[in-house]
Length: 224
Image 1 (cartoon, rainbow, N blue to C red):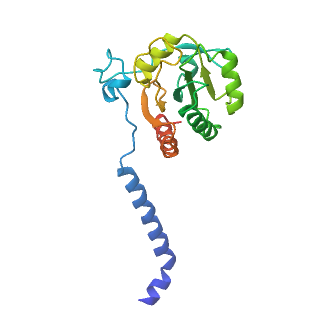
Image 2: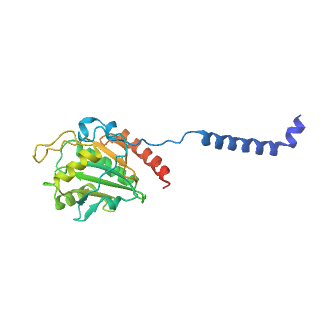
Image 3: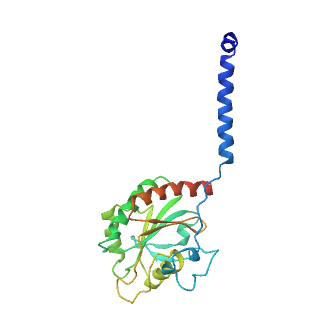
């Protein structure tokens, strides 16, 4: 018997290795592929969703927009055509959660720096204060890279409508004052088909780790 194993040792090792590879491939083929959920208005907390949309259970997509970035350039949905992006709502004079959110978005910016399929988008909820020069100053201070990340200002009603009817990140109607948009800390993951695929606490490092993993999953779904 010992002579048999010695004689066929190479063959047995090769066969064992091949069997292990086949079993691994078979297991991976049977394992369900992770697919991120597609968020609909009816699945989001009602306090964040405009009442006209709270019953909607399918087909929701981010509406078109046209606003101005930190360089005075016009930015619209077309600039994010066929791309994955992460959006949030903030204002440059925010003393509480916004600095933490911005720091975490800077970290995400570094993570996606060399990825041509993923971009960042931040909407100011106080556009009267956050003029183009103010946004540019903030961008320079925080290390925003123009090629990856747009900070947007513009018509307040348009921004508020986007927050309430597209991204679902504002808690209640404003009263006309400069700080009336009560935005959440959420980062919103949007796919190339303009659908919401995830919400993440922009103040949480753990949530940022989850976001990075979900970016990989979403890229695989779209073959990026």
